[in-house]
Image (cartoon, rainbow, N blue to C red):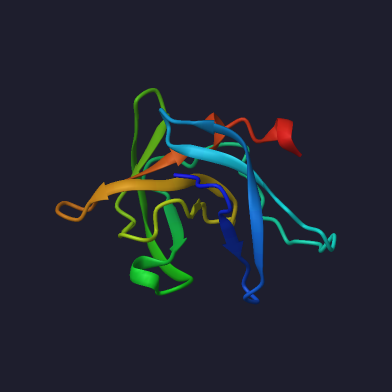
Length: 136
């Protein structure tokens, strides 16, 4: 989880410190802000307003074993624990958890979380369960 002096790296290789704003240990996520002394403008991804139907295509971007910006595809297999988690067959390997799970429109529907390679059983935290709107 979050450690003091944590950093993010953008696509161009720039590094920025982050500051934790909120966290939920039950769902295993943090909300953070980027310490941006130069007021750099960032591109943001859109958050979906609704979840896809079971069977719809989804995509994950992660860094498995340090291989940056790796794209994986799959479908929504189901929803678990009152829709807290999205079940998918999209591979989420070591190093990819914490990345976005996208719908076919390129909107974020979840944060990749955990899985079992055997049986293609993977999960993402439902983005609609995370109170992102109050931090805009």
